[in-house]
Image 1: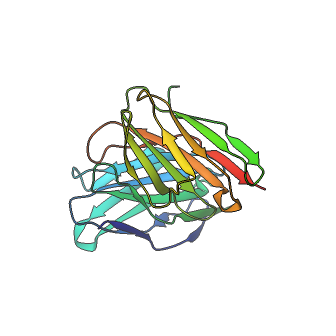
Image 2 (image 1 turned 45 degrees about the vertical axis):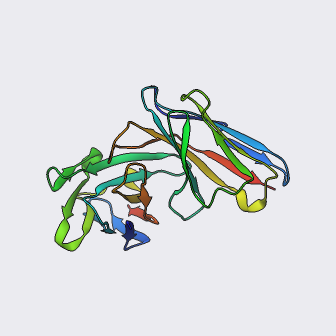
Length: 112
Length: 114
């Protein structure tokens, strides 16, 4: 069975410092992995996606994530946080045609 | 922009009333999903359509909930005899066929049951 664990429910960083949002997954097959961002009262927007090509995936707004099979991790990073990055971030795993399992989310706070 | 659209965006209803939400997916997408999200939680899968066929329903979808996608295009989610516990955001998403395709979400429909 597939599952995903986001290790931090809240992360605070100062503007201009690096961001690290952690995600571990469990999957019986070769999974597809996604990161989505949700701003308040909005739907979810895709940041990036891994589907067994390059293990380092670049997304929008300067975010990237690295797939590490040995660690079953797919952590999201950004070199320099911006105030507009403050939002909720969801890690998602899918190894079946229609099953997309969401983590519980990490709320990112960016301090001025 | 031809993204996923949902209507209404917000609905306040009295307990016991029926409500219906509509979702228009991206036009070429044959898969359509409904999720529910409560405050502080990630989206939870409710149901999924492949064209007009409803192929999977979560146990979260009690018999007060019904979803349709009559012509394989737009979908409706109806909640009968609403309860306060139904208060949540209902998210619609769509995707192309196949494993690992990106699902694209609408802005969601907020339901408040008073």
